Length: 80
Image (cartoon, rainbow, N blue to C red; front, side, top):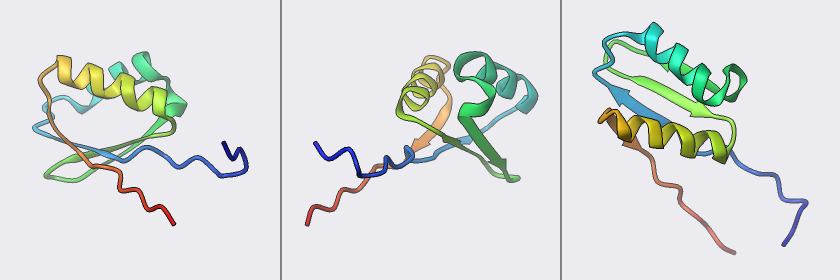
């Protein structure tokens, strides 16, 4: 395995129907830590970008357990 290849961030998660952003943000901080995600909100959705795969998996598990309206982008691999 080539350890010189930089790790890419997991794909972003798109959430719709967020009624209480502050409560969600507090829960994300509790679950994955304040420094392990960034978010951007628009009137239609909330985009969450995690910093590593462990945070990504923990966040997906939590959101699925909450039956959140969630869209997950699929990672596309290119092998040369």
